[in-house]
Length: 226
Image (cartoon, rainbow, N blue to C red; front, side, top):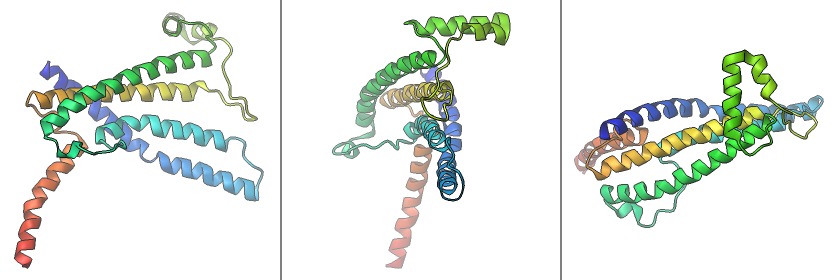
């Protein structure tokens, strides 16, 4: 169990770390889009696509960067007692509370899959069967066979009318990566309770190690200054 957890944590954390570092620069993409929106409205004809593209970029930035935020422990929380507990007690509590997050993400993924199927023209109640048939048609008959499985493709009810399935696919993928990261956090807490350390590779742990190594040096400097 522990060996599997170690491999899982190493793989999932590495993937989400790299995706998160890339998505950090998404803020500049959104700024550029909104800046062009202001410029085009002031000096040229208003661009009809800027608002929705900025919204789609925000979805990607928020959901694809979410797993990295979980990995960093950067989520907003109100800490009344947590910081005074031992590492083992915190691990026990985190191992229990992360189960609620896993359940919530599972429900969200189920809804996102149904919404994505709807955006591809499936209006039934079995979206998993729809994607299974769509994948089978693509593998056996290629793109033309898969296209026959699609219905009316959903579009945004605006003047620009973009297709909605790309942003829904991104949202579903982001939620799935967050679920994988939440499971990774569960394994880390489980290992902490058992007396093992699986956090050696995550950024928060590395930063804590650097700070602890720096503390004696800082203390020495303060004593020398006296």
